[in-house]
Length: 341
Image (cartoon, rainbow, N blue to C red; front, side, top):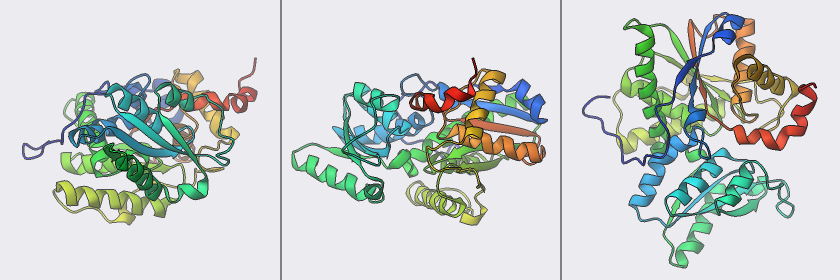
């Protein structure tokens, strides 16, 4: 990073840098060099990509004197779990607005929900319709808490805003150094592939590429919504970043942001047998565990594209493993028929 660039304040919450590991058997199988950037190894209870964003967001929260953090997500949200546990580590309280079809009968206390409860988070269950107004609902909860004299900091869905994007600018700086070691000073055409669920990780990778002048292609695989939605969403985060922090050069147009659409399947956090089979097959091939909501869908999309055209992403692929292991446990019954004896 240029000497004129400085990161905002950051808390040391994640185990970084995370390793870049070659998937040798997978590479042989698909006919292209594939590496995994193991962001599932950022920690145990706070594992995954979200903690990178939270290092910056919670630093800002603490700098503002916050006592309570409020955020939102799906019932098995990795972001909410990481937020609750990281907040507890810092002596902060957390309030989570979690989406479920029937708030009167919330999901079982397992997976990420179990960890939310263990961390002492207050959970407010809301319907999918209410979730459409999540930012307003979080503001209302914040207003009630502030009226009681508690200082509040609101974190958007997925930690996906300009401040959170710094987490993946920093990850891209790690990746740049790792690629230089692999290449011995000589570049190799590389495509970075990541699951895209709220846009913050993909935004940070794109911003890091520009700030660091790194010659790589960045492709997001959307796990919900569609290409147009995420091109607009990521463009907005990058625009917010430029306005707040400045950025050299021109932000690319939304339609220049690469999103590999077509792999949402049954919908967000809903798995198809072929996606689960891909998770099983990778576990048996490389001993690497993906999750059903993000990395499983993104990997299934990546593998499907490579099976059709091994040259689709160039000579080398870096897949960002964004974690999510705990999301497998609530769907054990769906996985069981695929596992054999």
